[in-house]
View 1 (cartoon, rainbow, N blue to C red):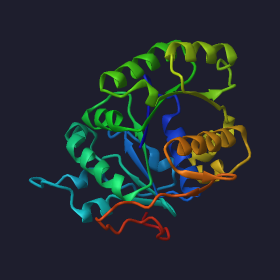
View 2: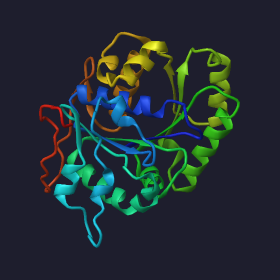
View 3: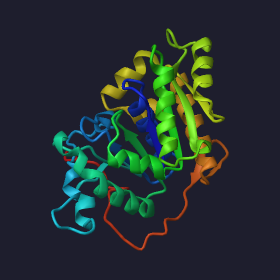
Length: 274
């Protein structure tokens, strides 16, 4: 499970998470994306889903556990091996989703090879639980006067939740754009004080255009610096997490240890009612 966090909005967490998800599914992993920006998340738009499903439907009054049919009903098929959950339709109910999201994560750990989690700047119980339990935490930053201190505070908060700094990665997004050159990158990495660090190249107008139109999968397959950087970072991270990546990035996914069998849309052909 990989979670992306930041100290402020607009740094590209959703772009990075959805791009990594497309890359992982193209490599053969059953990839679950969980949009925990529950109030205003828009990962579904980046992934080309026209009709988002309300994640709040997994939380039935008086129910002690999640029902299989609710997990299936809220799943949005994006591509073969790539399924999305979240956000919720009524933002004012976000604080009610802590326990249901924890239960959903527990189920997805048995059903998928990889879980990628997008988060909001303002953490509720759901985000805090996901960050505390993740195997990698990406602290994403970009340029701006508050980027370094805000990202550092986000890492400190993750640490106070019990996440070791060895599981954290500082990610400078849009490296090479105006204001995001080598000097800023060094300042950002020094402020983060993390051993694990990566720089994702700026993709320019192409990234903005394709992601806004829901063509993230096509973008990741491209030859630009952003696409190459995401593919390299994703493949290296998968190797570190124990996925068998060989040659040019062919992945042999681990067999899930699931006894629970849900009819999730890993391989179903997409239709008009995604």
